Image (tube, rainbow, N blue to C red; front, side):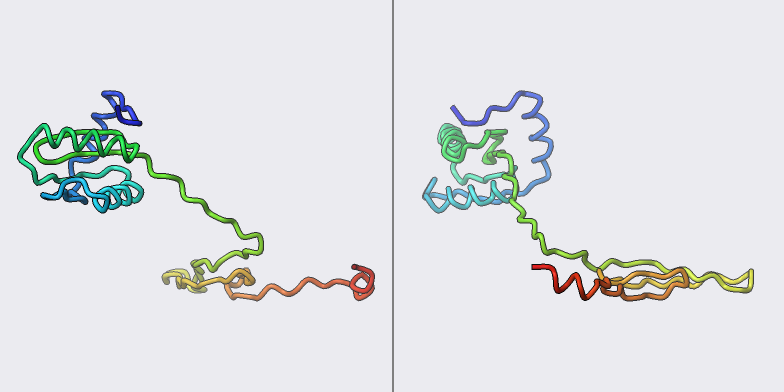
Length: 158
């Protein structure tokens, strides 16, 4: 019995998603080797839903392969049609380490300057603004000034 079970509605949805996929793992004459298991596990981690092509003419052997793959990789068997097997496993969430010292990154800003004459098009400029810069009313870019602190407070702080 595989570790993950899908309801018929979920299985139908996964079959529809897998329809346009190409096989990412091929199982040849050697059968299910440790290398094939490792590649299948890597493909499931990367894609979640994968197709596997089995070059075997024995249907019972392909069904056994599907069950064994589902058991060993803790995945849900979605479909077995011809020589194609479809497996699904949720993609694990990637951990992102938030840096506390991170500052805002550059951003692209559109600056629009209207003509003093009424009928002309406005001038549009795209400018990259860094984290320590700002755009003024006139459309120019200024650097943020360092905050002024008193000399006495600097001496008193530990």
